Image 1 (cartoon, rainbow, N blue to C red):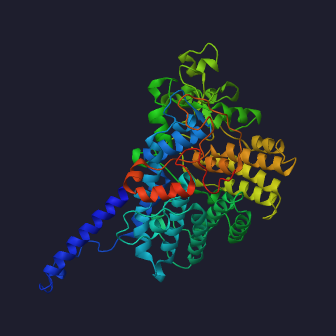
Image 2 (image 1 turned 90 degrees about the vertical axis):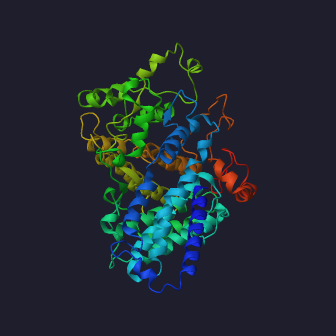
Image 3 (image 1 turned 30 degrees about the vertical axis):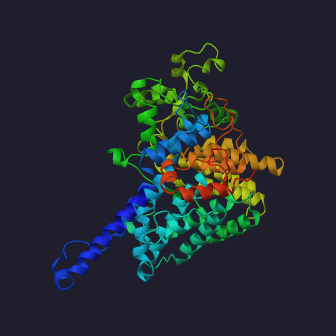
Amino acid sequence: MNYIKNKIAAVTIKTGVLAVMLLTSCDKGFEEMNINPNAYTQPAVGPLFTNSLIRTVGTGTNDRNRTNIKFASGIMQYHATLQNFWYGEKGIVNAQTGNFFETVYTSHLRELMVIIKETENKPDLVNQNGMAKIWRIFALHRVTDAYGDVPYKEAVGAPEGKFKPAYDKQSEIYPWMLQDLEAALKQLDPAKASFGAADVIYNGSVPKWKSFGYSLMLRLAMRLTKVDPAMAKEWAQKAIAGGLIQSNADIALLRHAPNNENTWNWDARELKRESLPEGNQGLGLVKMGKTFLDLLQANNDPRIPFYMTLWEGNIDARQGQVIAQTTAADKQKALPNGYDPNTIATAIPGWKNEMLKELSEPNTATIANFSAPSIILSYSEVEFLLAEAALRGWGPGTAEEHYHKGIRANMESSTLYPNSSVANVVITPAEIAEYIASHPLTGSDEEKFRQIHTQFYLAHYMYLDFFEAWSNWRRTGVPNLQTINYPLNATGGQPLRRLMYSFEEKSLNTASVENAIKNQGPDLYTTRVWWDKQ
């Protein structure tokens, strides 16, 4: 890993500094003379935390474009393409599978380690320390969900000189994450100062960090329903008792602005740059996936105009004039997954490339707008998980009550996005009420379970949170994804169950990777992580 190289370099520098200090120890007072009184001598943890939040939400091609979009959105068949570099959709092996692993350990955790070290065992900084630890769990739970066994103990607190961290079993990582999360939450103290404005998610609000942390605990707990139901129940009930996100006002999100590339929503930026450039005039790389649109249409879903448009609606200069028409639900058409320019005619007879212009694209006026917020953990997700918990007898209220709250919360959260009040695009209170009335939670517990998680799947497109939709699908099996029979497919036509380890990591930390493979199984897309029990 690059971070290993960086640590080696840091230790080398420190050794050199030590040698100089020993050689010059006779120069009494020399150190004092060389201290700049106008420079910081300790890390400024506020700016470090700001940077960590922004990096972890996603600021680069490696984690957003290659992982969230090219892998996860394709796996979940939200999007479709005729190109074969949409690796997740077609199950093609590519070195980019390791990009997320590299980014988490070299970027997402970097500032956090400094913050935690600088605030540890300092009573006045308990909130800064606790918030950094909660955020560290958020970063690490995604990487273990993607790869399975990964460095945890030697990644969260490795001593200097740990250049080749051991990989921990996911069966150990999950209990550790839950315990570490609980400890971090217990140390939060509303009576003490926190990061304030440096916290670009909650502006330093201790109560909101608590509700976020307990909501994250609920997510982690529900991951374990198939592999350890007793542990899942225990931690789900702890999360509920601790206090969860209660409304859309508590959503964990990062706001963006259209000023320049540094402040854009990176998912939107990557979709527009590579997949939906205006010059392509409807012949862009990505279209809406048929699995997804079929489900929306079968449910007569009012989110269709909000989610997608015909290509003219994605031309910035024309959006204001045409978006109400180009988003009409009855005009939307999707591309089936798993085809290329040579094979698509087997699915759509008489196919010509110009027909791409008739197919729907992600709506860059709304959910894929540069100013759209990045949703980290939503109120609707909390309610859908509570619906499942109630169905299992683990939590308060009825499953249907939480199910309907989840649907309502998701549709109402559309107001967080640009152009949410435009005619036809707007999701009205009447539409929400009608949708809820037409979607009672009925049937057997298994049927109710599928209804809950079908709505989970439909809702997560609002947030372009393909990663969490993928994790939830692996646990629940909802929705039914299409088999992808493609010549270069490495999964036998089945959706990916995990990502493969970084090629660089295999080279630099060979023994640890080989040990993980021995424990977990082959380093393949089809190998299931621990909690993804068949």
